[in-house]
Image: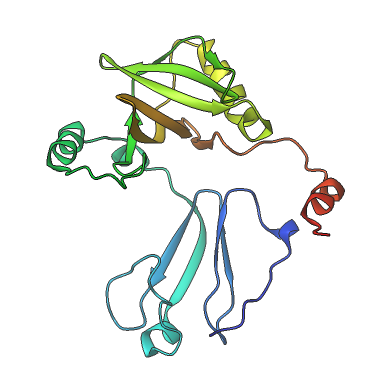
Amino acid sequence: MPLIRMIPAAKISASCHVSNPPPPLEPVVVSGACVCTVTSGGGGAPSVGACWAAAGDASARTSTVTASEECFIDWQRFLTWDVAAALNRIRSHDPGPLDLEIEMQEEIVLNEWQIAEPVERHEEQQLVYPLSADGVVFDAVISKGIEGKAVQRQLEEYRQIKHRPPLYGLMHYAKCRLVVQPLTAFGEDGPEYLTISDESIDRAALLKALKFT
């Protein structure tokens, strides 16, 4: 098993991925919307995620990750959701007693959507924002705790404007409702990560919370 080399957190932005290949290769930090090329040492086509599945494999040792300064801008071709395919998955699904709520989770994109005033669920400590698109209503469920502050602030801003950017999120079915977890909005400048707060972090308080006694 290759050694895991730690990269100081101060050098890594909130929106990044770290490629940590086996030695002697060096870790690569891919941040923001920069273009990253992953090449398999086995001679196959560029791929993502499986290059170092086996540290002893020749292709794993010779695979490379290259991050460039070029920004990716062609997001529009990904901003679609195949509703017909989602319906087919529902119709063909055979439910069982051990199914989880997220059993039929979908990645969705809402291109023209509306947002209404949230409804509070006191017992669950949640806010539910009704989202609507193409005549379909979704429940965007946000925690009232600190972990939901960033998303709530963004959704409140979207309530005040008429033209909203495409919204990407994860959807599952719960109690005959379409429940959405909003993750990213795609504006003119690229993706805006709704769940990442721009507030400063109290590192001392964080370390204290992580200290087990």
